[in-house]
Structures are given as structure tokens and as C-alpha cells.
Image 1 (cartoon, rainbow, N blue to C red):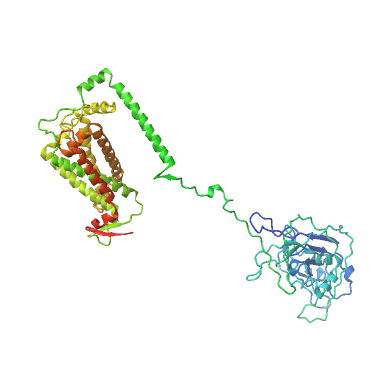
Image 2 (spheres, one colour; image 1 turned 135 degrees about the horizontal axis):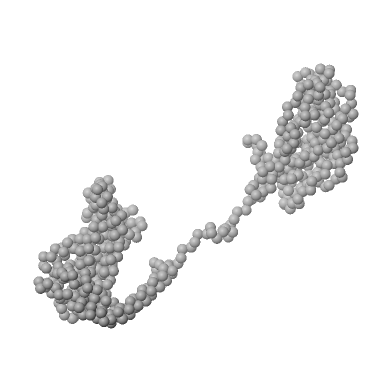
Length: 587
């Protein structure tokens, strides 16, 4: 007699990184032993009317978990044993998949034939499917305390009784998806069976007893009932399983109550403290005013660097102008040339007023321009009265900037017209090519801190004349042209004009021109105060070439007006003025 021991078939893990499922030696059913009993004729006898094949398959399965009661076990024997006639009788049995990976097709070819009995009784082909790991049993499992199960247990044999009566462990069964739609998770709630102790090896000569009885007088429509033979199963050595730490065992439900469902362990998730540092958002650096510490440090170091460069430039130029050829150059070109005889000295009253309006408008234009450039969510909008369907809607800050630009353009046009009508243009427009070497001479004198003689009431030095000419006739028109190109007054549908003058060019030039005006104003005011503040302020604000405080107080009054305009440039004051030419709305 040959004995085969088949292990539980194991598949993919139930969770990523886990062990294959089911565990080795555990599951909804215990080990299944397949016995191949040879020479059954010696056991069954030759007097039965039902033939017996060369092999009889007996499957014994125990499933302690499906009982739902702690310490209980159940035994399921095959519902019927296939009893077949000799293979010479004829009809072949279908063979399916192998019972184990890499094995032969099941059932074996040796028992693949059966036929009717010689007496004409119908053949018995009612063998129940063998117990497979992970499959539901054909019949409901019966607790070991029931009487029918006890009778079957007694007919199976002592070894099967020991397997059925095995105690359960403290390890709860893993439960997965249901076997059928709408049913409970599989396997049923319970605990895995305890590990078996090692038993003596099985002797090949162990006796096997079986009894088969069949009723030949059964009706033709029903197959004859076949009684499971009593088989004395030898002890099978269970494989060594890894030790597991037992979980706390829940309280046993009262008799008659449903067994509680096994609770799966809650997956552990990473807390905020366990997360990697890269997942944490970087905190914003602390600001001191509008800038961070690093920005303030960079500005400080940049300022120190500029001072060092300026000091080095002063030292180098002071040494350079002491050379003999530079002394001759400074003598030939002292820094200015004589104006035409028609040029009149002094500053007329219209120049003084134009100067004040220009300063007032330029300061507010720069302020509003920076606001438009940095504003993310405007607080108010302006729509012109002639607009249709809300077209032409712009922010209130942009309206204020463009309105100031229009006033500045009007003031500039009036200044240029009066400049050429009165002949005052000769003061700021170069009339000789000597302006360039004299401008270089004046620049070297400024850098060496040995400044040229200042006499702005009569004539500007050549460097001043070039800077005024550049500001009035180049920088101002360039600012106006680029501003108009970016404004709503520019014709959007003029394709040829837009192609010849793209808006990208205007955006690339408008901001640098503004930076030029800021630099010009800073240097101009610094030189006014460094080369004789009271006299220079009297020239422009009082219209006199004297040294007193009259021009200073007029200048101070103009500063108060400019600061007042800076403070008043807010929506509360601008909105009523803007409503005169359009509609003002909020966000």
C-alpha cells in the first residue's frame, strides 16, 4: 500500500510584503491525506454485486475553524465513494486538472474506467469532490458534539479521530473575500488548529480495513447508496511550523449565539513625526520689514562693495589727472564751452512752474507705475463711460497712472514749445562738437571730487547739458511711446502697426526708462545740494542769482504738496475723481 501526503496549495500574499496565503500547514482545513489502497479485493470480498476498482480514494478533512465553537472539530468524509467495475467494462472517466502543481491529471489513469455491473444494476458514479484547500465543502460541517458526526468519526478510524479532536490555537484565521457574491468572508470566523506533535513514522504494512455495501434493488432512476468504508488511517507526521506569538483570545460567545467575527489588525500608518523630512513644507523665512535677513545682508554687502569701488575710482582718477597729458587736456577743455550770443541768462517764470509740475507728476507717476507692476488683486476698477459691454475695464491704479501720464505729456509738450519759442533751448541743446570732450573733462573732475566751477545761472557745463538733452528729447519721448503702446488707447486691430511695433518691445523698454528717471532725479538733487544748495534753489524757485533762504522755503512748500499728493493717491480719494469719466466698481 502506498501513502501520499499532499500539502496545502499556497498562492499570492493577502497584503503587499506578506507571506503566501494560506500559511503553511494552517487554513480552513487541516492536512489532507490521500490513501491509495491496493488490492481492495482482499478486503471487500468477491461476493458483492458491485465491482471494485484497483484503487479507492479516501479523503479525510477536518476543519475546526468552520465549527464556530472553541475547541470543536468536525470531520467530513466523502459523501460517496466511487466504486467501479473492472476497466475492461468500458466507459472512460473525464480527467481534469492535477491535484498538485506539476502532478498528473486527476483522477489517475489506473482508475479512469468503470462500467455497469454484471447483474445489470446501474453503476455508482456519485463520488463527491475531494476536499481542496480554499474550497467550500460540499456538505455543511458538523460539530464534533453531534451524534451523527460521532458515528462517522467512529467509522473513520482512530487516527482520523485524533485529527478531528485536535485543539485550536490562539491564532485567528485570516479572512478574505467571499466565495460567492453577497456571502460572508471566507473562511468563517474562528481560530487556526493547534500544531500537531510529531508521531511515529507510518509503517508500510499498516492494516487497512474497508467495508462497502450497496443496494442492488434501488430504483433505476436513483444511484445506489454507497457507504463510506471504515478506514484505519495511519499516523501522519505534521511538518514543523514556525512558532507564532499568540494573540489575546476573545471571550467565547454563549451557547446558541453567533460567533464573533475575527477582527483583522489595523494597518499602522505613519504619523507626522515618522514622516520623512522631505515631506514637510519649508517654513517661510522671517522678514524684517519687507525683506528677509538674507536680503538685508545682501543689500548691506552690496552697498559696502559699491563704496569700495567708488573709493577706488576716486583714488585712481585723482592719480590719473595728475599726468602731464591729462593736465593739458583739462586746460584745453575745462568742462564747458561758450553759448551763442543770443542765449539769455537766468530762468524765466514759466521754466520755474514747468519744473515744479514736472517734479510733482514724475514722483506720482513712478509711485503709481510701481503699484501697477506689483499689484496682484486690485481693490477697485474703472470702466470708461463710452465702453460697451464692460470693455476697457482697468484697475484704478492703472487709471491713475495713465491719467498722470496724460498730464505729464501735456506739460512736456508745453515746455518744448516754450523752449523753442523763447530761445531758451540753447541752454540744453548742444550747439558745438566741443560738448563731448568738455563733458569727459567735467566727468573726470566730478569723480576726482575736484568739481568744476558751477555757474548754472549763465551756462551749464557740458555734462549737464548732455544729460538734460538726453532726458528731455530721448528718455521722455521713449517713456511716452512705450506707455501708449501698452495702454488701451493703442489700436488693437491694426495688424501691420502691431507687427511693426510689438508690445513686447514696449514692455522691455518701459521699465528701464523709469529706472533711468529715478537715477537722474537722485543724482540731480544730490548735485544741487552739494554744489551750493541755497544759490541753486534760488535759481530755480525764486528766479534770482542770490544766496538767501527764499528759494529754499519755496522748495520746501513744493515738497509738502508732493508728499500730500503721495498720501492722497488712494482709492478713497481717487474713486470720486475717476467717476467723472467712468464707472468705478469693486472686485
